[in-house]
Length: 291
Figure 1 (cartoon, rainbow, N blue to C red):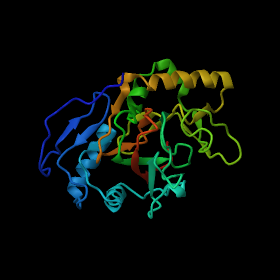
Figure 2: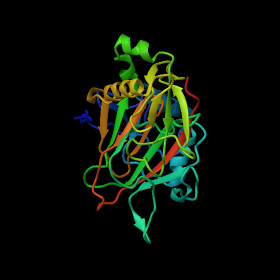
Figure 3: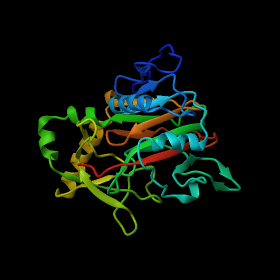
């Protein structure tokens, strides 16, 4: 089973000096405590939050009472926001996307309604994939619908030297079919399906660390390899990066705000009952072309 968070006594009060945090798991992740994201954040505090995020790949803020504008304002501190590709699931702000299985008047109000979703990295099929994704929990089911995160730094660093040599300098093609393969692997490059090739190993622009940049849901082939060899190598890489030792599973609570670094962390979702409501608000920060 994936590694779960260890309990720790909360540290209260506005941070002064060192940022009060606790590790979410040995694999990755940190909870930042004593910060109210509904209030303005000064430059010094933001720098500490950003540094913690770079170090831990995923940061969690519990018990946040955020309006849409609060979440957008915080996300914009990290960079320009991406506009949602699925406008029918946005709010008045096109940078805000609802993730939900709730139906109103017979129609879904959000994308990716229910069910398991395989490991992936947001927007890796674009020339400039997302830098960060930020998810805020408004309604959560009593069980399931958890988000799993995998440490892509650790995945690369623990590859055998032979495998590192095999993937060195190579690129993989990522593609995403919103209509036919949004939750499970199965995308094929056809007209209208966005796709792009990126290095199998990318270097993080802030930390300088190398991360294994493939994922089970959206990576469909390695350029320059025969199909069978490409498929076999990708399956080896997928299985390796999904090793439970590299994974943290987050059990959501209402009013959680969680942000992850798409450049070095994969994420997936566990299944949950379609009879229970789940409503999340997502904002995505634009990124750079992987190198």
